[in-house]
Image 1 (cartoon, rainbow, N blue to C red):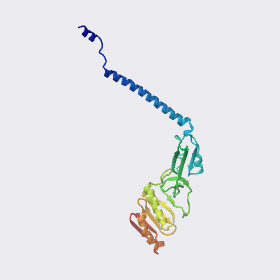
Image 2: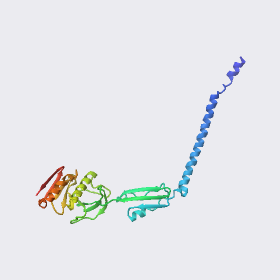
Image 3: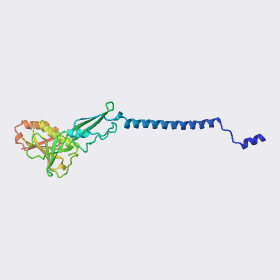
Image 4: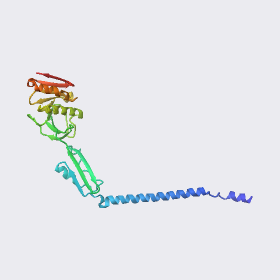
Length: 260
């Protein structure tokens, strides 16, 4: 009877399994503590290495392409850190830049910037505003151009009589329409038909007319490529009727009409 009383008054003894799990939790907390300390030391070391040692300090900035003024701006070190250096100019600020590529050489601690300028493809003139732009091969207006008057044979000129506003940094036409326009102008020049200018009376109609220095006017659509008419134009040009023609109409796809 006394033995049973003693067992009921006291607490039950802890099992070996309970003691083992408690020790495991303590060990896990200690390991986590050590892990956090290790991560902190690594982070502190990385910060010190990046910011307070010469390991990531820029030794040189090399600029390929672009204008001298752009190169001078890019060589300025607003940040001397190889990892965090950013170009001080952007393509939005300088629309004449078609490509801006930055390469980091960690071994030589050098920044290389490659610039690619947009190439002048066509002069696009808004006749009502008397304002002209140079546009590249994609139809992107990137810099002002002189307002053209008279006949220009060696320069591709598009005169837009539409009542609209276009700004530098915008596309003159949608890419598809511009490529069709450019393809038609290139087709005519490839056939040795010097184009004085291309006129667009109303951009909503998606039509244009090419004014040749000799020969008929060429009417065409911006909705499709006029390459289908290459052989027709070659035959007409080789005939005695060419200089007597008033126009050649290519505004219907895969159809060519002409009138004397």
